[in-house]
Length: 206
Length: 130
Image (cartoon, chains in turn orange, red):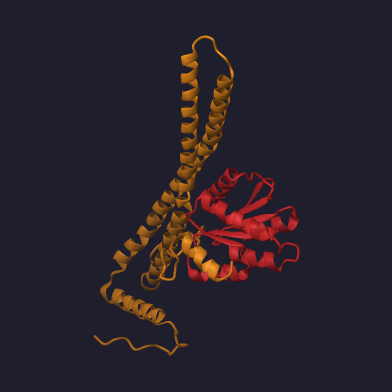
């Protein structure tokens, strides 16, 4: 079939990608019209709110899990610190005292208190790591938001097409709340880790 | 010598991140920490309270981004002396260059650890002491 003639000449599109998308959209319009695919398009559009809901659920679950984890760590950290201090203090007092009986038991207790104090220290270190790991929530959350944003956009494009060619289609509620653009996941011009950031900063005199 | 009482403003739109940064700072001995949820909130807090001595800010936030906050701080006569450490997931070179040019005191990419944060803070304090 003959390709449709371009309508009025618009202001020139500088980005060839935008032009491509425009051509693809026009093509999609035509094909849908010709083939009467409104039904399946309607179905596709209707799956978008569901996809958004599921993603939002994932985001909410991540948030709750992280908050719970951090709360538990916040309560546990001082416990570990206190236990360690108590062990050190007790073992020092025991070492400074003189016992006529149970000398061996006292020595063993001092040694065990030292072991407990060391274990508390690594426990504290591990708790900090658990907390630091909750950072995933930030970047992962932004990515989920970005995908939700894309779903909203796709839905609105589909709905626009539907409204034009199948005016009886029900409008679905498109929410646009909470959409923040996330970080570009490993874009070409990105640095890898803090070392490269430092190198770049050093080269900038910072 | 830096006082552990130094008043720090932590700016991030994710409450989880604010909690993590707050806890990491606490681990480093800094307990006088306040929070703001975006650049606009932070700027208002800084302008209303001149006792803040340090700002740790995310980049990507609604209302006012971290880089906009940084620029606003640098052009405010009362605030421009404040050290601003950017802590962000934006790892693009252009971001880092932009932040440095806007007057950032340091730049930390997420994910980071208490050790990295400590290192960057010490470096900024050293520069401040000079």
